[in-house]
Length: 440
Image (cartoon, rainbow, N blue to C red; front, side, top):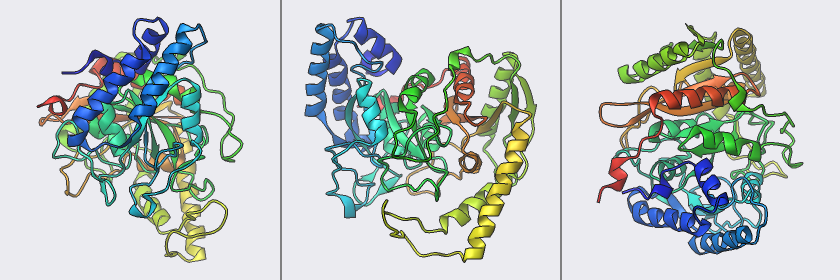
């Protein structure tokens, strides 16, 4: 059974620690125990920093007892995707070539969570499987994939081994695992959160799609963490010092919502489409002005992304070290950038008339290990635009697998996406404990 400390929100844990209802050591030990029990079946956590986490927990209890100010995440455990550096722990990207790569410095986002008082439990697996750490399983059905590259992060959070964590998203790699594992995930507006310390290295001029963002069981935890991660770090030149409005001040009544389920590149399952339709009705019941309509050129997102994948990137930050061969000529690259820009112009003009876009996250729930995998025509467009997206569980497939929906807001209105996702979570129940992960 779930230890109660492993099923509540990070917001609740932080409050109860500050109020001295529970100790940090209790919280950290409960999560380490759960990881120890479940991880052999999930293979979600690939580097566990148990001794260090417990030492930090005891020190955090001592600081609180001495009357020192507690940060907003004082004593709250977290985990980190193995594409984001944490000092002293291997960061390999699941690639055997980098098995001995141990960064000496935290990624900006990890350092910021630590400064807020959070305690790192360990690093989580990437992709459905990789040659270094193997396969990660979905806690709702161990024969199924958690999907996406932030797979281990979503799996261990859904199973109660970590209350929150950090993932990264280029075409859906926060959003797809959040959907498949029934948790909440945020892809922030591009330029809000620094990418410094992401591995592999991300050149923000070459790849404006990729962001780092929080993952958790509850939307309120995404909202708690986002301002802690945001802002200029004087290393990533793409970061904009844009204020973040309070999501709790957003009024859903009167918001203009466009929603869709099908288009030329997308054919969702009946349950997936029905979940999105039901959420549209729930938003309408809250006073939103909901319209079923399709943004222009949305079916172009896959081709634009496929062409992007044919362009090499540098695997090093300070010299050009291409990670593959160039498959496009210079004129083809210029045409690709033109088509991408035309796509962005079409969508921003569409968004002049709406505050939110509601879609499925994928065409189907999680898929079996070794299968074809789910296609992602719903997440790709909003990576190309760089807009904020929140995924939250809103339904369940007949076989018990979670079904999420994606809420997309205007650029820099992460607060609006969070507010809508919180309302959806309240109306649909959000995260549900996975019974299979607890089965003996």
